[in-house]
Image (cartoon, rainbow, N blue to C red):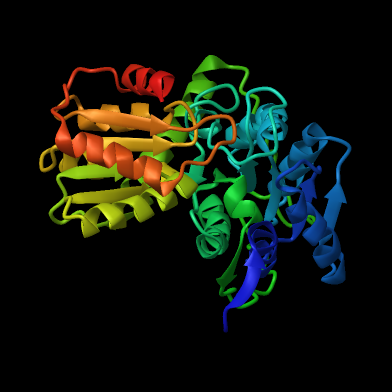
Length: 370
């Protein structure tokens, strides 16, 4: 199919429709509202379910109910709205049913603002609802990648009976880019052996629940989730790499921060500086092994994020103190310019960095004098 000009949020919505989305439940909040608005027209015209719920709490519990029936279902929201959904997301994870969630992140904490940010990384990757579970978390850096990952989200959620979340900052949600849509898939409801899709007198009742009163049974469920997660870690890590063959400095950034960093990397390469970029596409599971291998070959890492250094801790764990890890972030809805990242590359290329330095403290000190 030819490329067309798509706005990020609307592209995500259409990609979900073409992936076989059968039910959507959501509530408006900027900067993701276009997803809901688009689907409010598109889903009914295709005879599919769309409900604007009374709140984010209502929306995620509607998702929970639909997921139990085996349909392809999703919701979308933005940072504080996703916070309200966390209890329901934990129930979905504990019930082991597939569901997809899109978070178009905004500045915070609190009500914050509607500018693009990446400060929900910890919420998605390390936080979320209560209990022991890990969602699959995808992080696109372009409209085309958001389309592709939207389709993938449903496949991964069903494959592993898991929550799959796509996190993107408002830049990707609001920008317009040429992109290619996938072919329309027919709505095809699998005959899942776990789904509560009506027994019709032909089988035993299926009961789905996240309640395990006996601790021994709860432990079995948790171990089942953990074993499944180990399979996901082994098979579903995705990332993009640029100029890593001879890199002496490696930048690690996801989403828009990684995209901005790539412009800086290209400028630095033109100046003869051996720098490369690793952009995680799955931030959960995280490409820890790739970073660990790079740590044995390069001189230093620079982590860049639109937050105060949340992915930074995952990079530091993977590096294991073998080489310096530096950090550069922008907060509260501020988006870094390529020149800012390029200045950091220049500084690192000229200076000797201490392995044991606290990268966040050093970054804060530089910000204070900027």
